Length: 387
Image 1: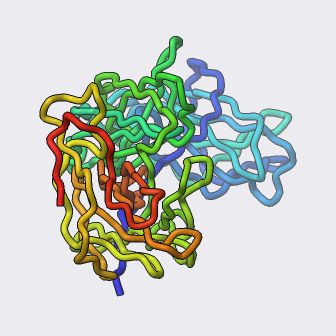
Image 2: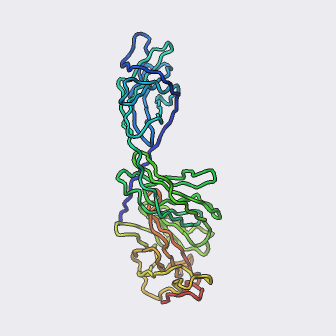
Image 3: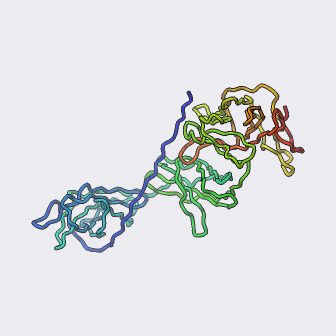
């Protein structure tokens, strides 16, 4: 049985709570103070990400509504400075993010609880955080947008992964007021299923390392989704089984995408370590050889070198799985709703992965409505592959 493999995705988040900054100098006092001292903050943490140091702590069990003060210093300084007041916490957790840090330096931090009469009780230790020099991965190149039906598929050169500390890519919509984040992925591809037909949408992409350092944006590309028999998408049965099956329809008014185990499917997509496979459904058969073409159909305005498959082979169909490649047309013999056999064809435009690392296939398709008629195109003037 074929089994699928997937990449892991890593997305880091940042919770920010900004406080005031003062120039006061203080010294570290560890442990509970004299009578009336507040309960000390617990489980103190400090870490660096994306140009900032985030501090976090928990409320002590005897916390009585006291506020908190954050103290910090460069590791080379002698004294601590009060850098923030934190008065609001959520679900017994508190945080503060220090954005006033410089790459290549180390910083020390501690937090105190402050009673109404000004007594401070500190965390049981200070924490040192090393702030690295921000060196992001390379800017993505060769960004391409493929317009589909109510979707745009983006793919680009995987140059970010050349950095040892690469983590993921960010995909942006380019709007008049500036770029807006639409998603993140650790694959060099992204499927935007919220792109409406008839609208031209612009995109750019950046690379991010495991410490949140982000590259500049790639060149902008645009895609305009449109409704037709082009740009259909099915997923690998092992990744998204409910979107893995396909049934040829007399018109696009009926959704051709069905589940990978739907008994009405004409085929489903499967992948394994050897590639992508077209797996015939119940009663369906596929011609075992693909045909290299430049288009599913070559219309009157097609280029002189346009190559299409005009007629289905008369025999030789099998019920076995067939390996598929991009820019190739495959022919099937499938049972219609009346149980009689008709010819159909798909042209694979692209095989790849979406932002969740789910394998997919993008393809165009044609379906002959007359029983037994092998003609797949009525156009002339194109260089045709005939059987």
